[in-house]
Length: 177
Image (cartoon, rainbow, N blue to C red; front, side):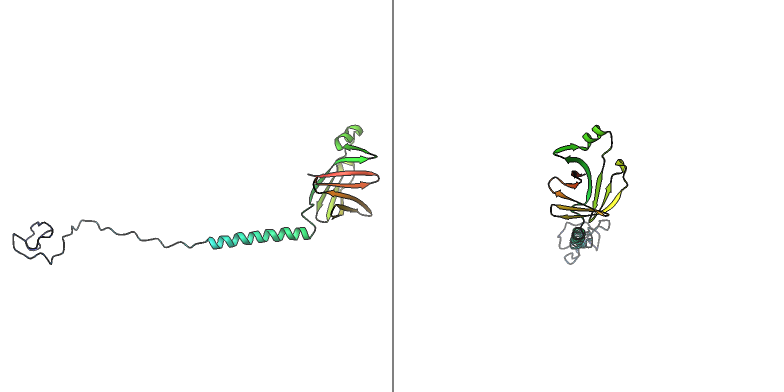
């Protein structure tokens, strides 16, 4: 502490200056003007909690995906869609793979059915035929393929993901790729 009357350095808590006799009790404690003040940091404004908005966006996206999937299935798409390639043929109790038929005959037997909803495309270009647009109907295990004036019937095996079409005594087995 410092006496404000005479400037004498005094121990803290001294009631009067021993040099000049000035009363010191009412005096405020001396503070060095070079002393730095400790200030509490100013708190940053609280961030908004966006969790609710994020959850809302996720729920909206999930709902849109569900609607698209349900609409696709209701319109005939989805479950059976894809490219089915000819993998085997059976006739008169004998079954041959496409590779075996090609080796025996020297001809290509590459053929596919591309299913999209109730429409399909038959592609047998490798066998010398043009692509043909047709309609396909799945009714449980039963399959109906309508190619212009010709209607072919067959079956669908959900476990094996195959379509078997019967025509002119030959069963053609197409496997989902």
